[in-house]
Length: 533
Image (cartoon, rainbow, N blue to C red; front, side, top):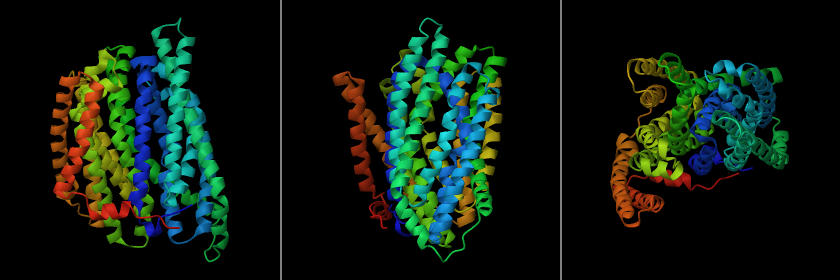
């Protein structure tokens, strides 16, 4: 197992995770199209409703595990405390097994209380085994991330999504065929159940892979542990206390940060159903278009932010624990620069080609225009969510995880008040969700950026990190749109025109970046730096 020397090369590791993240999201998009054809927008709505609650439970029981333990173990490895690092890992496995087991049981028994849509309860219960397995998978991923090695996590993510896609489509089709004589709603419910089964199988396959990788590296790991005779070995009770103190702030931060999706869905559903008189089916279909199409598409570039953040936490933790503020700030600046070079043009591309993208991925004619409008409006959140995800990671990496908790809570309360007001006082309905999503993500960016400046005296290079990438992206968007329209006029094919426009966009953006001298030399040096043992 290789690690990056002295915390360098984290952008290379982030690049590995980012590529995997993009592949995972592309697979996710590609399989959602045939899946939607099988279960419909109604089935998408039931799946999304259950998945949102499932995600919230994962946030509490396991989702924060990789980031939390990678930070803690990275600090121990920096100090060469190999025995304590491995003991921390083993104790975390026990901790997660207990917490995940309890969360799974409580979800099965009381999960329905959290949902206004009773048709989604059976879908949520299908997720129960996945909740337990996800915690164990998170521990193994976090362990290898702490060593500065993202390859294992990347491969496991791709395997997880591949099996998720295959089994989801097969199981959904099988379940719909089994209920073909029942109502459309019943078919949609059981189709969503099939999709949930696919999610669980994907996690199981990834867990098996990660454990096999651990077994392959175990001899080398134990050798390092046995050579560590200088440091005092911490007791198990001390370890569990440290695990609790480490994980709890991460859980709170991630939980509140991601709570907005589920909270918005519940507020939206309850007001439209119980106050405005919409039917459950109407609300479910509308929310399925918003969450299952527009939001899913925007999640592709946001995955890059998650990858950069995962790689950044152990790297920042390592430099910060040594008191090297200058190196910490340099890593933050490089990460922001790299992220904006991708997030800003991605946002522009989604806005410019929203309808063409939706038509390619989700060609259902009855929801095409609505999904395209939602995607166009949500495209700006790619930038905001990317930045807020990264700044969350920075604050967690420097040992200030409570700050993003407070920031997320403030943003959540503010956007919830606005959402209720918009739903009760206007007829915006689905567009109200878009508005508060933009407000929440932008407010998180602002609050986190202020906190980082106070903690590290960090000053971002506005023109280099944001201004020039934005200028290059606007030029790219104009040229790309013209290329799409010209190609479509000649060939009359959305698929050909869109891929031609994307190719022109990449060339235009790359040439513009070179002409504007936007890409920093430090980025290229760090990204292509070789790993050292």
